[in-house]
Length: 345
Image 1: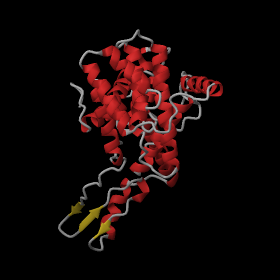
Image 2: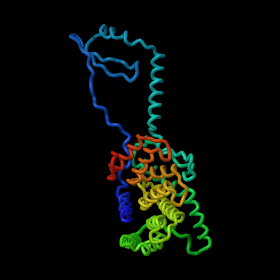
Image 3: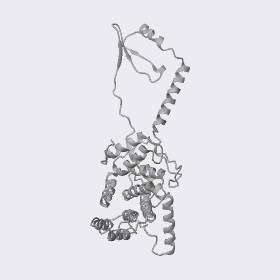
């Protein structure tokens, strides 16, 4: 993916903020049908029962004796019915457990120091798309602000703020503006022209006050574009971008903006790149559990690359148990949003 593609992805996330990225939990209404039993004298409408004692046929004529003939097939007592219902419930529960339905978004941080212990779980049962998206964005802000790397960055910046009148770098409230975007476009033009050194230097200057530039500079440091590679410093800048964007988005959510605020695109991109860092061990110890959690968070906020990545995690059992149901769901979601992976549908 090129740097210009990153900008396009940010804009797409912003533009699609009013759309639903999750799959609907409402099943389509069943097709109505009628079962009839008839002979030369009577016609009986049979309603399929949910439980054994729900059988209450509706007859079009007085057929008391006819119905009585069939009563010999219903020989269960109330105790047996209750036992059967309990057994059916247990079977359904076991089946749901086998499919891991509703379990993939749980907030368990077992095995990962990069996932806050109080990270909220998000239930598949949440019906309203706006409410569900707000929950996922709240989850993203917590991941961005409470992981150990972000805390270290904030601690370092607080120290700098205490010893300098200039304030701490990278914490400007104006995280993205038209002028800054123009300069980022110029830095991208230099990068595409092969002038990596000047391009990266420009990203570095802009990163003092622009979250998107912090992401770009973090990627340049990670991959050594016109500068010696420095993955640990790279993840600091990516964490800074995520934390700064999260501060803006937290304020937006608190004010009732369920679809997020002006820094949503930057927050999602930063979460996705942090997931890549945790997956590959770029500047931080490999953490499959955190990688999967970060990918899934970005995926549910509209990042189509994250949709494919979390699908692979579920398919391969990376960062947790395999779950083909969830893998298929995210592959389909990516395809529906224009990012199909060859061989998956």
